[in-house]
Length: 357
Image 1 (cartoon, one colour):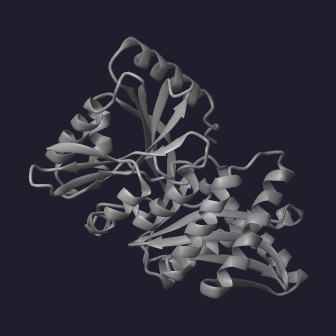
Image 2: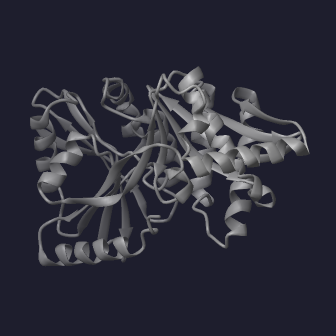
C-alpha cells in the first residue's frame, strides 16, 4: 500500500468518481463523509488567505486501486512552523470518519492508521474531532490510546409501538409539553410547515435569524458566521435540491416561532441547526418543533434513528434516548517539538470544550 496527498481542488475533482464509489458502500459513511458536503466545504476553506490548505490522503494498492480516502485539510500556524491536520468541515460535522473500500475490514483500517501516522512530519499535529464511534478507523485509534472522549451524542431510535412522539418525554416534561401546547393554541392557530427546493433559501435565512436571536438573548456567540455560515447555506441548499435536507417551522398564524434545519441520509434523520424566538420561550417552541420533526422522521420518512448531534444542550436529553460517544484524536509526528505541541494542544482543546449538562 502507498499513501498520496491531494493538495489542489483540481486533484480533488479528479477523485470524485472514486469518492462516490466508496461513499455508496453500505455502512461506510454518514452525510458528513458525502462528496457534496466535503466539496462545498473546500470552496469556503481552501485558499481563503487564512492558512487553510487541502490535504486529502488517498491510500492505494500497488495497482493504483483506491482503498481509502481520508478527507483531511491542514491549518498552518506560526509562519508554517506548526501544521494541524483536521477533517474537512470539522467545525460543522459531528460524525466524522474516513472512507474505506472495505468498511468491515479491521486489517485495512489498521494499515490505514499505520500509513497515516507514519506520514506525519516533525511539525505536524493530527487533531480529528467528532470521530464516529462505529468507525473501524476510530476503534483502531482507541486501541492505540490515540483517541479520547470528546462528547456524548444523543440519539433516538424508531419504535413502531410509539404513535405519539411526545410520550417519549418523561412524565413532568410531557405535562409541561401539553400545557405549553394548549397555551399556544389558545393564542391562535399553530401549524408546522416544511420548506424544500425553491422555497428553501428564504426559510434557511429565517432559521439563521432565529438561531442568532436565540444566542444573542443568552449572551452567547455562535459559530454560524463567515465561512461556516456560507458553507452551511450552500451545503444545505445543495442537499435540498437532492431532497436530502429541509427546513421545518413552527408557526403561530403567520408568526414563525421556531425553525429547524433537518437532513436525511440513509436511515438517519439529522437535526443540524435550529433557532426560536426567545419572546415565546415560555411556550417551549423548540421542544414542540423537535417532537414534530421526530414524528416526521420516524412516521413519514421511515428513518431508524433521529440524530440530535453533540449532547451539549440540556433539552436534547428530554426524550427517551440512548447516548453514543464522539471521540477526538490528537497525535503528532516524530520529535520532541511535535509531541510537546500536541500535548499542549490536547490540554487547551479539552479546557475549551463546552460543559456537558
